[in-house]
Length: 63
Ligand code: SF4
Image (cartoon, rainbow, N blue to C red; front, top):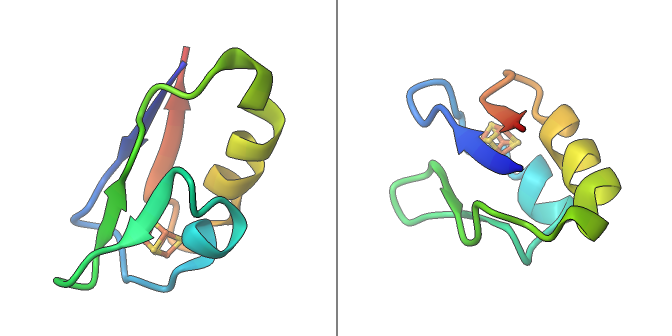
């Protein structure tokens, strides 16, 4: 699985970082930085929840 971030949509609201700071961080420019875009399969549930938490649908999970 791979995390894909559409930084043009991100509004820096930080929901993803609040839920999974190991994978997401709001960078200095106010948009998301994916710290690790290939989480272990065992983390799917949490990562999916963080992806789904984005209010502007800037995140998706492929695979
Ligand atoms: S939750 Fe969405 S809008 Fe907020 S920082 Fe993460 S990707 Fe950006």
